[in-house]
Image 1 (cartoon, rainbow, N blue to C red):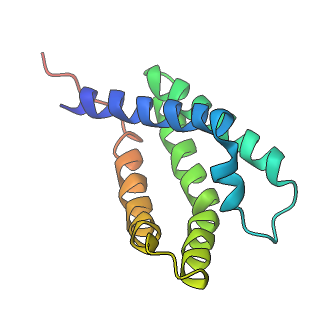
Image 2 (cartoon, rainbow, N blue to C red; image 1 turned 45 degrees about the vertical axis):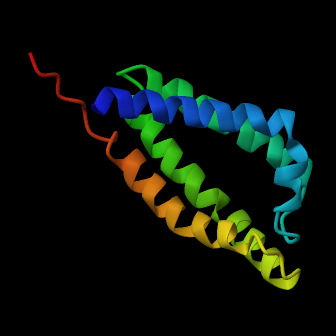
Amino acid sequence: MKKISLYIMMLLYAGAGINHFIHPEFYLKIMPSWLPAHEALVFISGVAEVLCAVLLLFPNTRRVGAWAVIALLIAVFPANIQMLLDCKRDNNPMIWVAILRLPIQLLLIWWAYSFTKPMVSKS
């Protein structure tokens, strides 16, 4: 079950990273205005997500990959807060999605943390 969870996580981050290049406008919309170089940051975060997925793939880099995922989730948290603030300001009926994203970030951090320790194989 742990391996399935790992593969799902790898696919999630690889897919999300690739999506930064396919649909950058979504990520550009939620960038906090106080951050510089929005387009570069969207590109960098997309590369980082794909890199995290690759690091999770190999047992000898998995721990670093899991910590990298945690760092990335913390780094992009301001964008999730910005999304919530924008939805509130615009009276967007999809505000519930922005609200839900915040605790999901914590769940994703917990999930990544579960891979910071070596996986024990049962023989």
